Length: 303
Image (cartoon, rainbow, N blue to C red):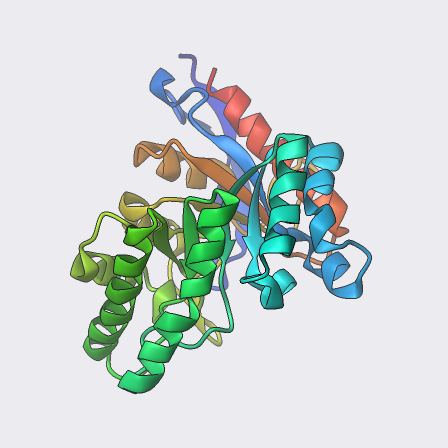
């Protein structure tokens, strides 16, 4: 494969990137060609959904008709009271099937801390997630995405988060649903810590959902996003291509997508890469299109 010209980006402490030209043998392995598909995370449309401009049940048609994307990732907050509503879930499933859209996972928030130091609260959080496991199974998803939030020392939080995750994962295993953890603030944004939790749980149905951008631990403290991706990708069962802002060349200004996708594919990952636009410099529709087009550009460069 020919050498290609790419843009080098140097990451600052805050996660921003500075650009300079360089030559690279990036993506020299033909085995990477056509090795990932593109999905759409519902959070990309959170402002339109929260305002009522778009209804949750129309997510499928927006994904397919506006962006030509045939795989989606839900956020539970947009149908929070419907997890056990079989009529509503059946409507979701029917709309997806009618458009040929695949349901991949449910991102679950606001159900308590799976690593809560209080054993009763930890157990309650685990049980709160059961309904989402069941909803994921009904919709044809492969996973639910959870948070590994906890309190205490570094090591204590490994033990607590691993306990909650293991117990929830064992329930999910009965329905063949994975439990995957996103780097989502606090110690979960420390790649080394979350990898240690994965090793501690040690279950084939537990994994990670590495997010390109969610490596802010607290305040101005950032974990190196590229190092974090390298540490989390061995456990990845999904990947989130977080985006905020794009330059005039169509490159994301906070994450070097070429470098990120090199890490993703070098790990042997062959699943979906989910668009998760979270910026405000572009409209949600434009932000999604810019993210999609950059991912397609990278994918096309592999062949």
